[in-house]
Amino acid sequence: MKASEGFSALNMPENRIENPDKPREECGIFGIYGNNLDVARITYYGLYALQHRGQESAGIAVSDGNRVNLHKGMGLVPEVFSKEQLDTMKGHIAIGHVRYSTTGSSHPLNAQPLVFRYARGTLGLAHNGNITNIWDLRSQLTSTGSVFQSTTDSEVIVNLIARYSQNTLEEALSKCMIDVKGAYSLLIITENSLIAVRDPYGFRPLCLGKLGDGYVVASESCALDTVGATKLRDVEPGEIIIIDEKGVRSIRALSSRKKAHCIFEYIYFARPDSDMDGFQVSRVRREMGRQLAREFPADVDLVIAVPDSGTTAARGYAEESGISFEEGLMKNRYIGRTFIQPSQDMREMGVRLKLNPLKHILEGKRVLMVDDSLVRGTTSSKIVKMLRECGAREVYLCLSSPPVIKSCYYGIDTSNESELVASQMSVNQIKDLIGVDGLYYLSLEGLLNVFGDCRENFCTACFNGDYPVKIPKLGDSSKYMLEW
Image (cartoon, rainbow, N blue to C red):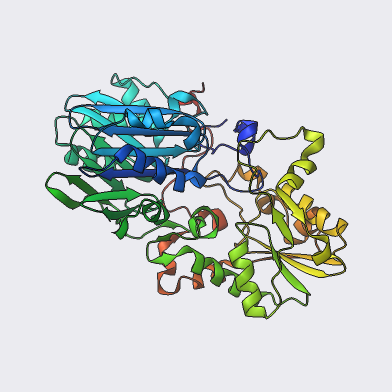
């Protein structure tokens, strides 16, 4: 793997791949500060609500005011934690992390939170995002004596904090934010405080909530809802929030000329019941479907979705067009992300295990199928084949995002550019590849119009190559790459 490229689906452990035709989630983080609260168990449920953001590893660190107790491991949240384990984790502060590796191999040492001792005590860190200048920083730190135990970019942040340990933690973090480029939402635990940090562009989401007399910070508001917390606000880009016995205080450490929230959070990654940076995800996706119908009015008998990520946009398309929405594909929700994939010659069975077409709805019909995105096209072609086998007379595919033509370097694995079908083929070529009668992408202009006056606040690099933060050139830093 090249150091400057994200992990493709081929780099993932085979039994962890749910759909190689989709971008991979990044990570989810959750933190809580509160006396008289079972912070470990609340964090467990918070991570459960964020499980869609990472299924490779999970971890929780808890502080009782004197020491930080850490437990983490490979697997889903309920696989890593037992009731007995949670019972041993007593304290009033906790942070948790669910991970999908974008930088760093799939290895237990790369699981988070990372907990370490430095000059000012014990510190634990959970990170969502991707640092673009990781290998330059790593080289500089190594040359001055820093030692690394993992291949994650998060450990670079840990070493930078240690480098600035002569300052207060708030000052050290402010200096780190000057050095570090790219995407990062961080949760930090010390013996006596919980700290949240968001990069100056606001690539990855982060929000603050209230639970009784305590406070909660999470990647998405759905996690706040799950644990019974009330959302107060989003953490601002460039902001550091410190929560301790004195309450909550904020430092605006760094600012940028523009915001660059990840637009794919709204298209695919975030849970529909979350709201972030002023927008409710479900409403945004429904409006994407409405915009699709305005751009591509189709003469078909029914609208169906590729569940679950295409369902809300499909309903929006149906509402705008007046065409009936039907459940043409039934999803087997009892198949988790850990089931053993079939062998190469049985891949179609793997798709059928997850999605089963309803023949009595599809037979003889002209069908418009709505999905959120198309990365490689392999799964879509199998779904289209199933629809035709069930008697669908015509099949059209509408996507609630523009063509994905560039890789993401900010914490999402969209595969290498050579694997992105839209960067290698025209729309007509892709149409023939997946076997549909028509293929339609939502325009970038139409997508941005969904956000109204805030249209300039989003990163759209995967659609147009307009990277808000400089990215490394291929091969620039491969000499620093370590693999387990």
